[in-house]
Image 1 (spheres, rainbow, N blue to C red):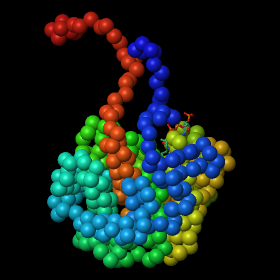
Image 2 (image 1 turned 120 degrees about the horizontal axis):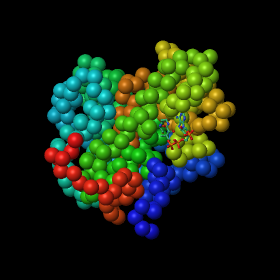
Image 3 (image 1 turned 90 degrees about the vertical axis):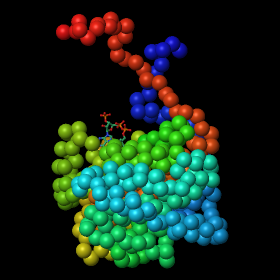
Length: 382
Ligand SMILES: CC(C)(COP(=O)(O)OP(=O)(O)OC[C@H]1O[C@@H](n2cnc3c(N)ncnc32)[C@H](O)[C@@H]1OP(=O)(O)O)[C@@H](O)C(=O)NCCC(=O)NCCS
């Protein structure tokens, strides 16, 4: 094919950009299928610990008891973050985007990693474990600093999800809260060639280092078409306000051709494989909560039902995760940061795979501008 005649695939939709053994995803099957390393998400989301899921995704197999215990210790030993990272979060201007602060904190974290520039498989695996542990600590520190409260040291007697809640609130969460947070993290842990993971692979493709690749992923996740939709899903529920307002609100949004956060997906056309778990858990959480507004889950359900009845769009994971985090009293301004604290697992697994069989990712653009223009020297231009 000669230059200029190649077909452009808008948004790289449907393009297979490489081979992977991390995640199988079929969003056209009904019901849709999501498997981490060959295990169906429905078999692991609600029953396994985040540590088990992280080990599975990063190492490629389910851990036995000894492997899980060793991984648990590895994460616990890595939870603390350098004081310079905390100082940086404190020094940033008030009111900057929480994901901009997080991205900066991870850049600083990289500077203190003992294997920052080591791209060996062993070093990348060790860095993956460290970042998996440290990201939750950064998010919790952001929250405490935002609130003007002292940063809470990790508690080594707690598992990852329970400790995350503890570092956020300074007190232990009850079992339902911990289980819900853990399930939500399991569901966000990995998702094939999504935009941020692809950004990670592009950076790895240049043989840059793992932290640089992850920082690129964080930048991609921040966007409202991707992880930023998590924050917008909260605004959606708040803006709709009550169940009676669902139909007029949605009708108006469609009439104005506005994008509705928490709906639509590039690969899921029959339903997001992750939503059923959170939908069920939200209901339980709403009933369990004495202080939170039970209508959040009702609004999410009614909006999904109405949009589905119009045969328009599927509800994606962010819609019910927004409601779940609200019931968990999770700081809602840090929702996308929370997604990053889970997705570090998938980013790492994909990066390690990319490093193993690496080739620079360098596509082409179809040039549609003017050509062969006559150069006019500056002094002759009007
Ligand atoms: C996820 C998303 C980026 C996928 O984008 P995409 O694959 O390029 O989807 P398309 O633009 O091809 O969508 C097809 C049609 O549905 C519409 N559509 C897609 N998502 C929509 C949404 N959330 N609200 C309203 N309409 C939507 C598009 O406008 C398009 O309409 P058109 O054919 O009349 O132009 C998009 O659905 C979106 O922005 N959703 C909201 C943000 C979100 O929740 N993101 C998190 C995903 S986990």
